[in-house]
Image (cartoon, rainbow over all chains, first blue to last red):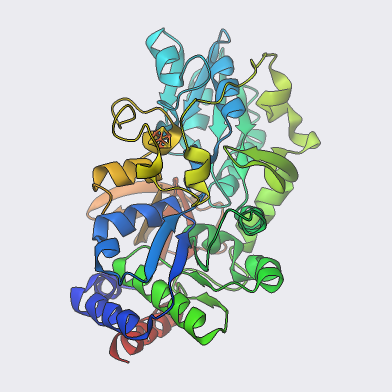
Length: 363
Length: 71
Ligand code: SF4
């Protein structure tokens, strides 16, 4: 693989030719959802939305890790940060997410030790360098990130680190797709399936979902031509009335996925019912640390009380995450809620739909 | 969160690989990858290599892309 291959996926001539083909065949009105925050960002950045025919609406789904994290989980993170001798290690996007009474950023300003890390490696290093303190990694994200966090727990065990803990708030994509299909307010005609979640879980992980709902699906990468070819595939499936589960990201996604990573994830975590922000509890859609690794489980090893979550009034993140509303349909959008003063996580995270709309002016 | 550009592994030591990202060396974990070798192009997520690019699958995808663009 040379970088040259990628250049073709960025070649404006190729993208234009695919758009022409989309225009040629698209007749029916359809609503397509991308279920990955990185797709959302690249769709906005490349201006694809402005180039598509009126028949196609693109909606963003529950694919931004910070955005789907339940309010109660955010509140729990904040409580953990207040414990003496604790160092919180987290991905940066979580910092500004407002909890019911505070945010990690506010706690940090008050002197709590909250450190942004790029990977669980860095968190393990912090634990190694601070033997007298307890490092809690805030585990959010989907099947792409969960194996990396599982691997960190295995490493901590092998290194006999006794001061490394994880709060697991991980979420799984296929059960969320199923929940979207069951909600009658959600009207989606096709899914652009996530790239790197699919690298891990493989095409096979969507088979049950696809067989059940027979809805057009396309797995794809992050370059403009990747996304356009997924749209073309979905439009064709819709026009032909012949839904399929297409893998257009073969350079990265196999049928079986990354089995080593999934095995490590399943060694450490077990599947549980979990709450998604604004969506509610989705059966078998979360990952918690198994009993045998409970000495690494922050939820079990620390005592903390989480206040009842108060849902931010007026914020429509829940509906936005399901493609029921778009940001301009939220009364607070741009008026009260901006990236500088975000009300909800969809405006906080760079992968959030509200932030993307704001940055690119809805285009 | 995802870095979609494949990077080349230039060194491996104790399950830690060094990749070359546009001229800058970065260390990544190879714990989630089966038999990574020097010279492999990998996709990296949050400090871990998560996939090794298969040249023939990449060429196949590219052929398909060209077809799509020319129908
Ligand atoms: S614009 Fe702000 S308040 Fe409205 S849904 Fe988005 S994040 Fe929530």
